[in-house]
Length: 400
Image (cartoon, rainbow, N blue to C red):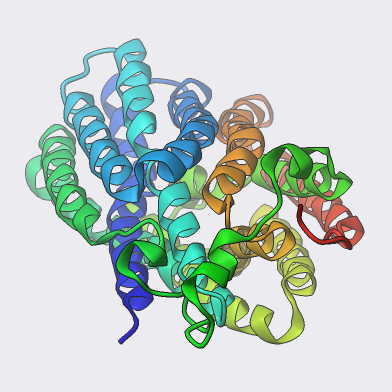
């Protein structure tokens, strides 16, 4: 078996653990609101700061991955993320919770970018499928994590749950990091699908210089696509559980809605990544953005468990596809030589916009008494991202 598939498996497991914990915030959200009485806007701000910070720090995670290799970056990130969670279990006020989640953000930045940039470098053929398989770990974690965390909180309380999750995560990511190898050449291999070509001539050494990439119009459009779709992307994960409660549904139903989101994301990452290998990355991205637009419309009109589950699953499917396609789109456009830096650059420039969504949704709820305006805004932003994706075109000339 080609070692690239080992890297895919390691990426899947790292993202399963990290995102399973991350998207359980909605469960802690409910417990913290009940204990401290904080407003939805102020508590949503914790996740907003966290999301913006870890996205921005992806800039540095990508560069460090290209310089140090993914092994050191992922292990160090796991330690920071675990420590932030452990300290979150001891807070007595809102401001320290902002600080502990900022520390966790430093660690989380070492998950998405290093894992997916490394997988992309290991594949020339079936790159879309490989990146989708690795990223599907995040979806599987989103599916399995919330029910397990809900049981843990019910059994030991939210404080001890934070501590146990933090310790387990730090240890697991430290062990998994040893499986990552930055470049096929480090093991005397070619990327999967390029085995018949000499290692020195593989696409692993080819790619646009970063300075040239950032001056090309296509790069600005890709940043704009992902910035626009990521502004509302964390609205559903943070607010699904509170929305379920507003609809008169139990916390278990809210956790199940999060799992439906995760299940949809798993199918979207795998299915749409494979489809992208057949019909192209950009058309697949356009389809996914259209579906995400419709999913926000569905969330705005949710009236019971069935409609909530359906809209959550549709959102997850589209979100999973959009996220999985980004590393492959970047590598297809500009080559794999600087994939880590370029994926990190887009993630760092566009990702912080995702921090606006949760706090904006919380503020709109506190102001209007419902989530209709928030999810309607999400639909409009994704429609704009779809138009921008149609306009984005890969460079016509060769790197150099």
